[in-house]
Length: 317
Length: 162
Image (cartoon, rainbow over all chains, first blue to last red; front, side, top):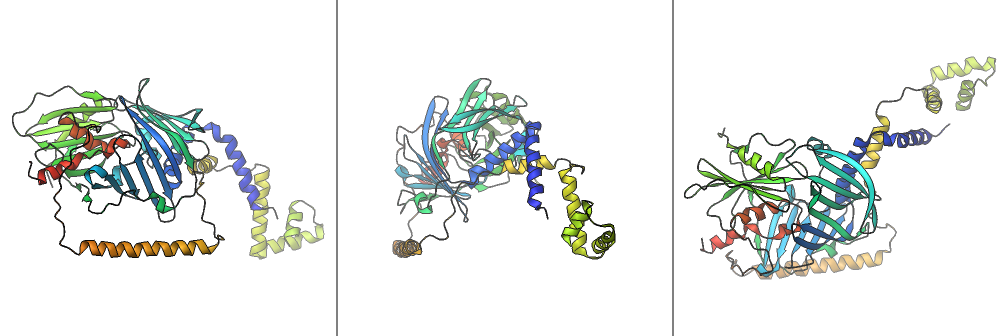
């Protein structure tokens, strides 16, 4: 009897011949693969992050096994910093303060895990295209471009490792300008690692632990959000140099994220300023009734203005 | 019987035996299944069967969506000696750590009052008060400068410098 594997094989051969027929689907598959690769692979590398006129180099080690994910990021320049992410819990070690800042990774992601599932999420805001091949950190990679569909977000130029799907380089672009840049300078993918090697370098006895800000529902919301933006989390937190607690609403379209801060106003209202910009980050503040609204995000200035203008207080049920 | 079914499909069965083979296919579930399966294969090979819309795309999407997992699996046949030694070492460390923690926690609990050390000058300090919001936002971005503690003002106010 003919082996049924033959039938499968024939179907697959046919499928691969047809693969070039649907570039949009191919691009989506690349994004899905990037998201999965960042979670499921072991990797160890050094990456550079450039933003405005600043540049930082960090080392990342990521291990995935039957227990889950563990990741260690260390700053290679400037102040010593260390982040250990254990699945959803992020511990940030700040040695000069003898402090550990603990966060939930619900809305947080580190390079190269920039792409989150499901990839379908991106189609509202971006046109996704598979471009030519390139090379990053000595590895062949496939360029995927995300062109913004409107003026409320930047474009993204990604390059994913052809062999494994891991994101190797990500540029945020405004027209032709690169406003933000992540790139591996060196990476090893698929090496055997032991969990012990991802432990903190610091013996953190007597270090102070700062717990994450608490999730909250303040009743504030944003009307007429730009397409594709969805609320990720809402927090009530205390910031340095602010008189009282502040509400933070975080929105994201899958790549770009925007924070809306709301605090009760003290003193006379200020004149509404023009939005300001540094690198990829735009900033805008305005006053409504007796509150200050501050919007910050890696989006064009028009987007922070639009979002700030949509902030309203919903009456609580 | 499967050989006879195959032969029947290829028209290589004697007229006298045809009835028997067809009857067998009709009565026996296993032979009926073989009959169906052979026809399916034949049709697939001759590309007669109407193809399932989107099947190739779905298979391809699934294939492309899965990363090539390079993480080596732990070898089942690895010599057990070093692993046992490691396990012992790990458990020793655990015990001593637990003992140490118990010892440390025996005295009165330490008050959670923090003395904030002056930040090193190399750290990009908020140039104006708006930068606090930028830093608080950047905690949620992929940028490694997210490490800068924006919400450490909590402790400043706890210190009474409010």
